[in-house]
Length: 547
Image (cartoon, rainbow, N blue to C red; front, side):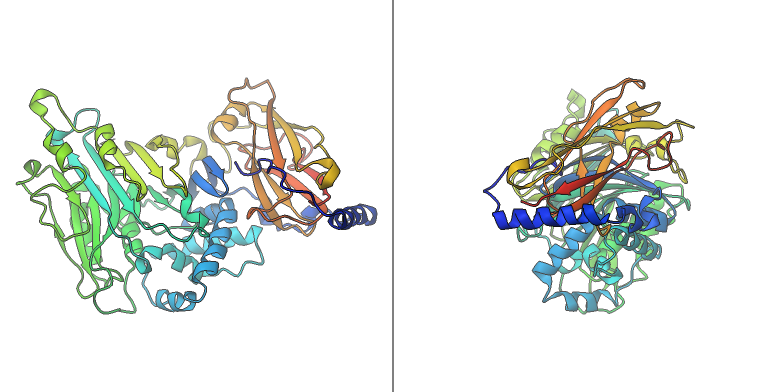
């Protein structure tokens, strides 16, 4: 977990210790200005988003978050909450693709992005990141290039399938599975192993949707909307054909297909999407799977020469026309594909043998999967989502999430706090951090910061929205964001809960920081702090002696 104490590795030089101690003492003696004088005011504002769950180690793992409001507000919340990882991902991309990046930017600068609100979301993301990293060199074009990574770096063996009607038993009416298979990229790109599930709740009436991607992405290679439609893209003759400068990236097209004005009848959505996308060239050839539940599924074919030129429907020769699958070939759909063909052939509804989420999942997994997403659909806005993502070694545990848990009513549109706890507040008591000063040869490798929270909404906060601890240097620059190494599982509203944070003197990229005065602040609280002003009990100072 971020913030967990790093094992001591060797002894620091006495010269480093002395310099770090001298710098720390100098800062204390001259009365360094409070760090909050240098932090932009917007860094303390409420954002319309919430991290619902997060498990990371060395930058790898998963984050689940919910954002709501206008498209800019959603983007800003995403950028603000995920700033560490968006900036880290950008730095890693520069280190690997730096020499190629100007050509990528030049290509992306001419592409068309839809929906047009993507521009607002990306601007919001950039502004949210800049709160924490005002010195970032990243701009909107860099974000667009990162969002369309799959349009200039191709996959090789994706698989998807969808089944419904007589092949599926209650409570499901449709089950869909998407396998994104992608080659392992250079290990320096650690954010390829940080899987982000972001629930987007716009206030303009467009569909709610969930993106399975990485930090900072508003385009999609795999996503699902409130109608239960899972959209994804597959490669096929991806680079064959002319390059139209105004082409629509397929990652943008996939996102657009989920959130355009689709109308109330899901069985018309495929035709609606195909007709709209037919107005554009496409940047990358292949397939856009558009698996609408209950028989509305199809596969849209794309080529750089002809754009979005055709679509394939389920074929009666295979499973009575109630199953559709996609690989990386232009198949006719009249027979099954691996890895599910044998599983489908084993089904026998007359004998009570139906497709299940577990059954389709079990035959889907391969070590080359970057991620697998599965949707068990009951009805609109009532579905179960399963997800697994690849790490550098192994995978994250399978996440099993109900749709409504991604859109909790405690984060209603336009709210700055939980709607189900009006007037609620938290009480904070912080014990002294120890040891303080910390670091160096005598004080140990980490500082421990215990904080107790109590109040009317403590149970909600502890279970859904654990706070984090931001670490700032003396200039006000955010250097790390910590999650608690200990937090209470269940607590009564009147019983304080103990959160313990540890910091080892390193930044979010695991780089050792110099000795000096650092400040911390508790962030991501779901309700206001009672008494003493907005920041009461939230802040503290650490004297770090260096390693």
